Image 1 (cartoon, rainbow, N blue to C red):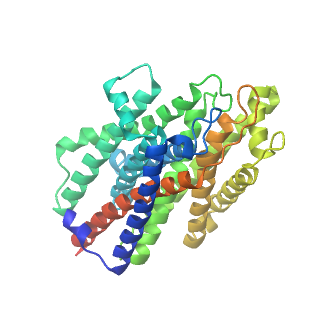
Image 2: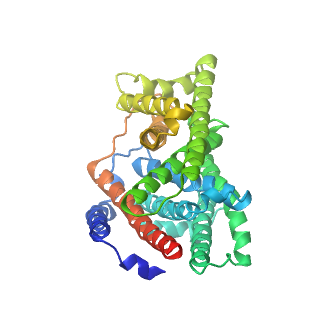
Image 3: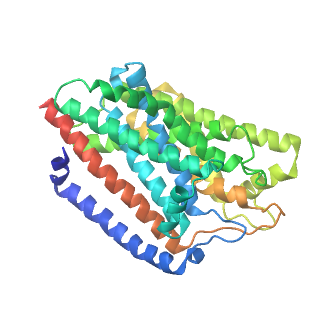
Length: 385
């Protein structure tokens, strides 16, 4: 099936070249970080996790979101998701690959990752995060590739693949739960110190991941004759609707608890994010944009008339993807570190080099995704022919 990745039209190869150029530029910037160290980033003593870990956190959610098509298809035999389940699994592969690259970028030098393997510490949540992420990557590669190959040969998937399929479903919930434990296990960071951080992460994931998947389906349908089917699109839209409502509800619960209890350690982070603190408020417009995007998307998706309009549905998915990215990819990390436990405000802003390296990781992920989707769509077209 790999040979399908070597065939494509002008648009396909243009996209591949653009992604390779971005990856090359980012690679040069990473060499600068490799030799100089993390001093090229905007991180500091007070903010020790920055843009890299923020992107990692968001993308773990995108990877976990693939289970929203795998679960109905494999466990409940929901045939409408038959065409997009493979795409969801391949999206998970690309997303987990980006997660691992962002961790390597955050370590400063790649060889430091060996410390996790050479000196395993089961008491460390980071150790378990390494286990679940690599395990999920392995499961999706095994399941996705073998199911696609069976589809190409017009035969049922092999029986031995079923245990891997069933394991991959709870594993998807596990990867984002462990990621949430990385944050909420830190007692000095009150913004993250909440028992509903894992459910909040999962709700956000099940909105952002399927939103991106739906957007990719619309793009693929426009440039090829692949059609995921109206029933699949609308079913996924309903999943996104309930997930984004749950995400906003969990956030409002956090706001109520913080301000009703009026515990300063909990309120200062929300004040910093939404109204600014001590004259510092670089994230204020971003956070309000996130709230507006998610609110507008909910209004559009709750109404069946607007949800069934695919142009409006596409806009809603874009709003949700950007809104959840701002919430988790910008506000979650900075909101936890600023202000510090001593209530000092030391704002974090990523540097240009940090952003370029991050763009390179995103480009690498989309490079992997483009190749995998090209193979999957080619096989679908072969089968239909």
